[in-house]
Structures are given as C-alpha cells and as structure tokens.
Amino acid sequence: MGRVNISGKQMKALCLLCCLVYFVSYLTRLNYAVCMVEIQSALQIGKNIAGLPVTASFLSYGMGQVICGFLGDKYNPRKMIFSGLAGSVLCNLLAVLLPRMEVFIPAWFVNGFFQSMLWPPLVRIMAENLDEDWYRKGCVWVSLSSSGATVVLYLLTPLFIRISGWKSVFYLAVAAGSGAAAVWLRNTGRMFGDKGLAVTAGAEEKNAGTGKKPTGPKGAGAALFAGVPFVSILLAIVLHGTLKDGITTWMPVYMTEMFGMSSSRSILSTAVLPVCSVFSTLLSSALLYRLKNEVLTATLLFGTGAAAGISMLAVYDSHPAVCVVMLMVITGCMFGVNLMLISRVPGHFAGRGKVSAVSGILNAATYAGSALSTYVFGAVAESAGWMAVVILWAAAALGGTLLLLWGIRKWAVFCSAEHAARE
Image (cartoon, rainbow, N blue to C red; front, side, top):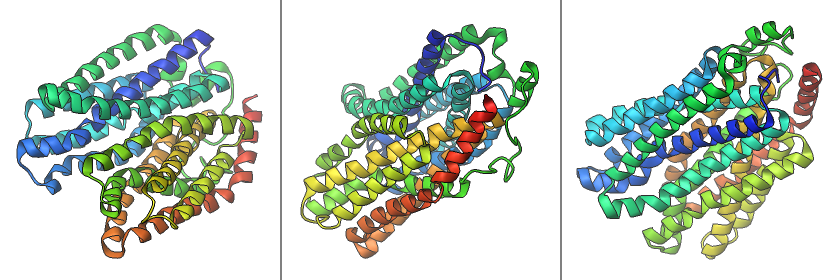
C-alpha cells in the first residue's frame, strides 16, 4: 500500500486510535438526537422545530463527505481529523451554553461538516499505513466502535438526564471529544514524526519519494473508477442506507402502531439493533475472510436481508417477536454491507492515491439513502399502511442483491489487477 514502515505494535496502536476517534465522533454527533425529546420539553418547542438540528446536521454531513473526501487526499489527514474533533467539541459547547433553537440549528449544521472531516481521512490513514491483515482488523474494530458508542449513549443518557439533566450529556461529549483530540494528535505525532509520508503527502508525492510508480489512474471521474463496477456499488449503498437508517428510524413507530406497544417498549426493541450490529460485523468479516471479495460478500448479505424481508410479509401484523427478529436480520446484514462497501472498498484505491475521496463519495451515498428513507417510509406508511413499507424494505434488499450480483466478477478482476500492480 505504499505505507510508512511501522511495526505491528504501532499498527495495533493506530487501529485503537482510529477506534477512539470514531467512538467519540458518535458521542458528539448523536447526543442531540438521543436527548431530543428532553430538549423539546425543556425549550417548549414542537416536534418539527426540534428535528431541524438533526436535519441540518445530516445535510452538512452528507455534502461534507464529498468535499472532505477530496481534501483528505490532498492535505494532512492527521491534522484534518484533529480539526474535525476540535470543531465538533466547540459546536457542542456552544449549543449547551446557549440552549435555544437559534443556536442549535446553525451549530449542528456546522457540527455536521466538522464530523465529515473524520471518516474519509481516517480510512486513508488506515489504508496507507496498515498491512492487509491489520487493515482488515482495523475496519472491523472501527465499525464496532460506532455501534459501541450508540449503545453507550442509549444506556447513559437516561441516567445522566435523571441525575443532572440533558446538558450533562453534552458536557460528557465535550470532555470526551477534547480528550480524544489531544490523545490523537499527541500519539500519532509520536508514531509518525518526520517519517509520516503517508499522512503528510499525497500518493503521487509519496510514490515519487520511494521510487514507485502509481498503480493506476489518479484523476477523478471515469479514469479513477476504470474497471470498477462503481455505479452498481454506489446505488447499492444508497439502498443500504435506506434500510440501515430507515428501519432504525421507523421501527418504534411501526411497533407502536401495529402491535400497540408503549413508546418505552418500542424504543427498547429498537435498542437491540446496534447490539445486533456488533455480531453481524464480526460474522461479515469472517465471511469476507473466506470469500476474499467485498462485493460478493455484500451480495450475500443483501440476499439474506431480502429473504428476511419477504418472510416478514407473512407475519408483519400478527407476530411482533418474529418481526423484531426479521428486522434485526435485515439491519444486521446492512451493517455488514456497510463494512464491505464503506470501510473495505476504499482501501483498494490506495495505489491510485484516492482512498479518502472514494470513501467520502461512498459514505455520502449512504446518507442520501438515509434522507430518502426518512421521508419516503413515513409517507408510504401514512398513505398505504405498514405492509407497503415492509414490501419496500424487502424490495430494497432485493434490489441491492441484483445490483451487486452484476459486479462480482468485475470487482474481482479489478482487485487482482491492483494487487499485482502493488507487488
């Protein structure tokens, strides 16, 4: 991968640092959404107004993924990650010190952009500095850290609110973000020092310094994705986003309206989804280890999700326990797809010097799907009922299966060519 020559111990330390960054990023980004009901009550505002900061954050995060993806290949990603964490801390602090919507909305919009400065350069640093084995482990660990942060937020927020109010959740995020930013900057500085070419220079400059030639086209657009089933992957990622976030968003409403559950029970049933994602991520990684093909693995995961969605149609209004299990299977498969297409696929572009750019583009597609699901599934449920929504869930999973099925062989040929060129 043209990486800096660091030891196995340092690779493990780098993976742990990346996990810390991504764990804390979820604490500083999702805390408003988790506290939203309490904030709505405290500020005496309506649901539509209370949801605006989340919408603003999503918009800036999605746009920022593309912008910061390209910037992450051009500028020092180590310092870029520190800036993103520090900026997010400031946004959290501003929001908690001036708790009103006139501050929350712009602060969370800016926070979304700072958050988008983390993932693309993070993938680049791992791809360019870890060997294949540690990169595989790093992708899994980072994915698990996001699930862990989500679980921690859901578990700690009620306790913090009961003890000292919703503001304490934001102060926790400020403290965690500040600490993580300092730990990241200090330890990565020690690790790379002046030798950190992979985190201070673009791939073209780095290859020039080592005497190696680039392994493929480095330009944007068609040249960058030559030989890659990019359109299929991109569209499949959009569908994966609609399922992963759409089901998480609407499952409490579905369980309440279809089976008469209380809001607390329906929220508790949804909380099992991030827990399930931990196991699905580990299983997906093990499957990839055997299949050696990210697109093939994602195809099988989409297919499993489609089977679960079709099975759910028979019991969507009569067996809540079965429905919860089927929804766990679908979302679990989508977390596995996320690992394959968002975490693993960009690493294959290290030789082309565009890991960060590809990561940003693909992650932005995820959030395009998330935005689509937030509106479409709610509108369909209201106009045509929940059976139509379940049909859409099954159709989205089936669509992802068919899209990726077409690109399996093409992706295998591309990966083989990139591997041969690096050697």
